[in-house]
Length: 281
Image: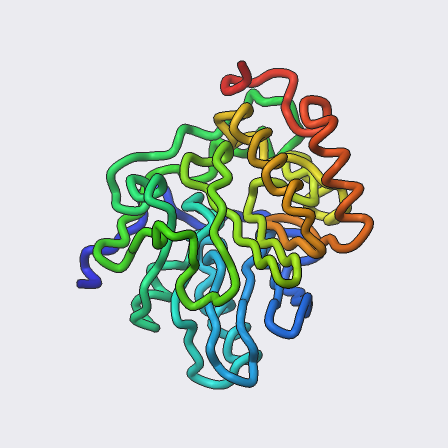
C-alpha cells in the first residue's frame, strides 16, 4: 500500500524559519501548539491517556522533529490515532507520508481537498504578484503539485464529527483552498483555525521571522477565492470562540481574540484582502 503514496516532484525543504520555530505552547490540558519553521502543528488529546490526534503535518523534511515532539509529550513510541488535515498545502502535509508509513494510521480531510491529496490536481500556482512582502515574492518556490496518499486518506464524516476528536465539529471554511476546514468545540469555545485566518502577516518576511502578533486573513499568495475567505472568517467569528490556534502565528484568547475577530470581519477588505494580485477580483 505504501508504494501508492508520493509527494509532488516539486516537494523540497524550504529554507524559511521564525523565532518561534521549535517552541511548543500548552494551550489547554488537551491542546498543544508547536511551531515548525513557519507553520504550526497541533496535538489534541490528554497526554495521560495516549489518546490523541495530530492536526496537520508540518513542513517538508520535518517528520523526525514531529515524532520527537509527540514522543516527548505522550511517551516513547506513541502514535496518534489519526492525522487530521485543515487542508493540503505543502506546509501542512510536508511530512505526512513519512509519518503515515511509520505509524500506519489514517488521514482525514474534506472531500473537496481529495483531488490535491490523491495526485489528481495541483493547487493554483502561488501568486508572487500579490500585494505583500518578501514571502509573497518567494512564493513561486513553494510546492503546489498534488501529493498522493492512496487509500490512507478518508473524507470527514458527513455529520460534522471529527474522528478521534470527541466534542469537536469540522466546519467548512473555504477560500484559502476549496476544502479548507476549521475545528470547533462548543463546550469550551476552542477553535482550531488552520489558515482561514492567521495571527501573523504571513506575506512579510520580517513579521514571519519575528512572529509579530497581528490578526489577518489567510496567507495571500496561496488564497484564490477572497469572497469565500471573507465569508469563512465571518462564520468563525459568529461562533464567539474563547481560544483560537492558527496555522501561522501565536494563539489568541479572551477579549483580545473577540475584539481582533470583530475587527477582522468589519475591516476584512482593508486588513486581509490584497489590493492587487492575480486572484483578486
